[in-house]
Amino acid sequence: MTSSAIETSGLRKSYGDKTVLAGIDLDVREGTVFALLGPNGAGKTTTVAVLTTLARPDGGVVRVAGHDVVTDTRAVRAAIGVTGQFASVDDLLTGEENLRLMTDLHHLGRGAGGRVVAELLERFDLVDAARKPAATYSGGMRRKLDLAMTLVGRPRIIFLDEPTTGLDPRSRRAVWDTVRSLVADGTTIFLTTQYLEEADQLADRIAVLDQGRLVAEGTAADLKRQVPGSHVRLRFADVADLGAAARLFGGSTRDDDALTLRVPGDGGVRSVRALLGRLDEHSVEVEEFSVHTPDLDDVFLALTGHPSTEEIAR
Image (tube, rainbow, N blue to C red; front, side, top):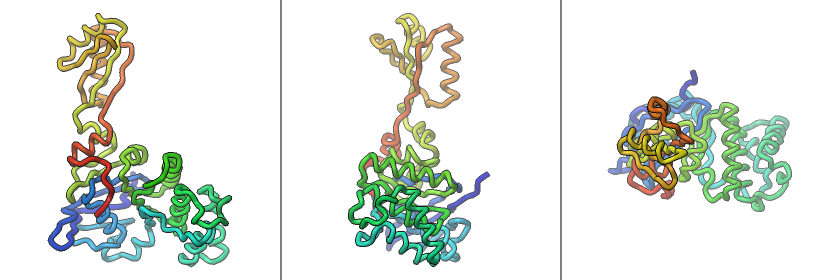
């Protein structure tokens, strides 16, 4: 069983008389992607600031990589890497020089530093652009270089704050592939994003933060099942079977033209199995079926009352 990379219990933080975090409990397992979602002003950036030792909590217990963020700050910082919303590369330096700067800051030495630089350039497909100024890089290349610079210290936990903001779809998917490869190597990723598709694609677990409180947590599938609108769509070969099925399931909606029946349900395996079993008991033949659940946009709106396109802010 994997252990916790990040744990918070009763995390509280205020700025003046404004409570930003009102008792947050998190448990992020090692080697997973954990996504924190929430509308503008929900407290996401403050949460990351506390977890990365940039802000001191007002209450609660916060442990990152097994270390208390207040009493063992140095050990926490040694275990983490942080990539902000905007790439922190130096445009006047080449990609290789940016990486060498990071190896010098980590006191790796010339030989070890050179090996790390070569490895990261290869890993992030930046070898051909290594000696070009970072100012000439595309948005996707800059983000990859930024991630590579974060990995110089070999962090066990990486915090990604909106890693694909402003990137085109191809560059965004390249970053997603990079994140997946990091997790495959055992790295833990704590992700904040305004793209719900990103959380859906990457996250093992998702937490929704609203007005300083966690309003939901679970897998993407778990969260989708909390929102009304889940249903099973059945298609039949003829109207007779359609009519027979409609009589079995009260509250269902039939479409005689398409020969389909929409049956409300939570979309879970157990309920789908029961539905198909009932059809089989009554000898009703189904041509095909599909399970439909709300997407994360629906979840976000239902849980917070806000649209999902608001930008991250404290």
